[in-house]
Length: 173
Ligand SMILES: [Cu+2]
Image (cartoon, rainbow, N blue to C red; front, side, top):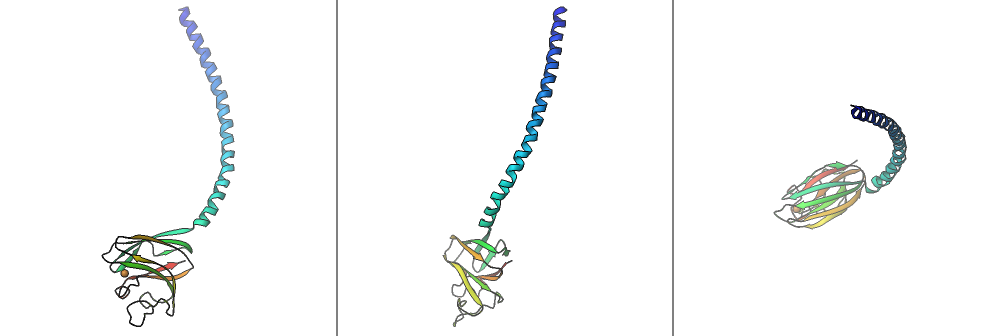
């Protein structure tokens, strides 16, 4: 019985010690917790500052272009002013290309060359920006261009492809 009481007494002491320890460690936790937000607060602006220039520098919009006989399908038909990366995949069954014109003309009213086989890339009202040439069957090629606000038309300018509907409008805001 005595032994039992002693054990109980020891347990009680241990329990009190544990409680005290718990309290003190609780205080430590609070102190640590109080310190953490200030660390986080210090880090947060730094992280934001680091992210901002990166966002500005990248500012790239990725556009997927599916190319086939005789149409383009874009995953987005507009985007914000800045850098764009167009990744075009030609699913065939013939070779194509991807030509970027800035123009306020209607997409189906671009100026044609004399034999009307294709768009006159130096014609009135169109400004040739850049292009992916030789987008052969199964090719995937990318073009990165910086675009100002305005209206654009993407054209496949292989003979007779434009006249068969191989163009699509695009807007930069
Ligand atoms: Cu084509």
